[in-house]
Amino acid sequence: MDKERKKRLQTVRLIITEILMVAAVVVTVIVLTFVAMGYNVDKNGELNQSGLAQIKSMPSGATVTIDDETLLLHTNTSRMLDAGSHHVKLERDGYLSWEKDITITSGVLLKLDYPRLFLKERSPETVREFKNDFEFFSISKDRNQILYAIYNDPVNSSQNLNLKDSLTKRPLFTLLNIRGDDVTETTLDFSEILKYREIINISWSNSNDYILLETKNHDKTEWLFLNLKNPENSYNLTSDYGLNFSNMEFMGQSNERLIAIENGNLRTISISEHNMSEALAKNVKAFGYNDSNLVYLTNENALYLLSEDSNNILIRKFPAESTIKFLISSYLDRKYVAFFENNRFYVYSNNTFPTKDAGLDTFDIALESDIDFTPDNFYIWSENEFLVATKDNKIALFDAELDRLSRYDVEGNFHYFLDDYLIGTIKDDKLIVYDFDGTNRHELASATGLSTIAKNNKYLYYQNGRTITREKILN
Image (cartoon, rainbow, N blue to C red; front, side, top):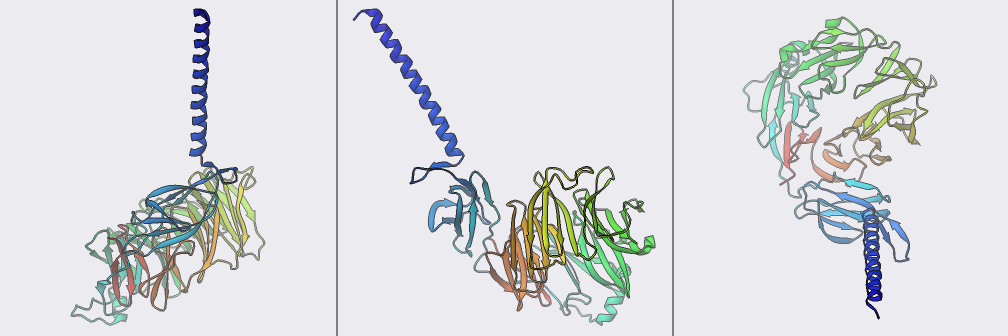
């Protein structure tokens, strides 16, 4: 064989080798890309796409069991799972276990970032003890403070005021700081502004420095703005403006701006400037406010959005006999308009809020479902992830993360959130907690009233008769 022929054969072999190497690299990249996207071949030789479960817990380090298979993994971790239903269980020595049925969707990330494990061995510790019952007890939005009033002194006091006298003469409030291991307190004197008034409702500002109280003075409703840092800078808004307010709320992230209904007129109030706006809308009977967006319902049962350019955009007109509950919200990159018409639950979503020309026509229907009750309350929770409707012990919760509705009953006649994801209720003087969707029921403590998990996640605080008690739930 001559040299030229050998040279040509070597060149061909080299070209073929390079082509095969490039093809192998391309195939490998394609295969790895498909694997990264969750694709796999099942035992029948069919190509399927998995989903990713991101599993965290408080505390971390819990053993993960999926479909009765204990993995060599601990939280916090991620795991590719076949599309469909799976059972997840988390266990850690010394803690109560957590488990739930989950649904994996092909190519979609499911975040299980909320499981909370409670210490099995917990010792109640009395934080404060009193001679008389609580007249007022409330927990700040950030779960760092408890505000309460006992119209008498603690059990170690030598004084013993008559309850009626203390109510009219010196209703002293106490603010507990529960940020750390050591609980500190500040006494607040709102005696003059609160004298003779019964507290009906309370709301906290986002800064947790101010509270808004709806009160009764005989048969008259009065709204009070209380400054927790400087009690002397508190106001009776009803008497200051000389107007009848039927409803009032803090305006979103603002701490010193309020929105209110006055004789059917929707107005804003600036506490710092001590002034009130002209009517934004008239003939209003209810409103909802979230992240600078406002919806309101007229006496004719017409639901409107007040846009940034002050246009009143009609959302829907309802029959006069219908009972309507509504709200407006944002979660991640989606906007939500949600309402109940009697017991029918509607959730609409879009990338932007309605415009004057389109209204809800451009929105997707995230939910349209009949519920077995007409709610008394409809509100937003957990940084806008949950839309929560309640009546007595009944809960209907729409999860914006999963576009999923949960409907269940709690065991007590009232309920509340202990943190972003846990719901608590009292039955037979026992505190019972559930995950937001009604799963993972635990009976935690002997309690008679409100409770919270402090922001540091270390302690559970709760009312128990005439005491404020805490238990360590996390080492």
